[in-house]
Image (cartoon, rainbow, N blue to C red):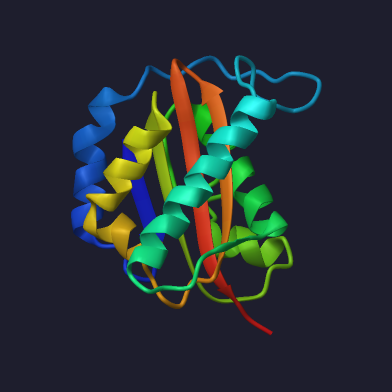
Length: 175
């Protein structure tokens, strides 16, 4: 399952998300640990750091192969992405909207990140390589990944429900 959000999000992408929703695990009861992480999730350890680093490397290899500037990791975008991955895990599905109905641009603005253009890719899968391949083979996701205006990235991942909830936020900072 995957989703793409940004200035170029299309009805076709929404239809695709609806078609793959049947592959999602059934929603888990919501609960939280004392750290505020949805029960049954991990936000992790070195394993998450490795897969996030690999996801960044794959994005940058793709961009380099096209002559595009590599992404630099941004801590605010990473926090936004991690929170959305955790939220998606808590509701047992993927959504660009947060609990308040906000989109990635709303979350970035609320976090104090100034942007000129911004986009988000989300997915649920049991394998990070599968996630990357889904995004590369989906026009809207690929457009976000290869948008020459995007220069910064944040990556979030939560393991739950027999798989991984991914959120990648890409942006160009504003002033």
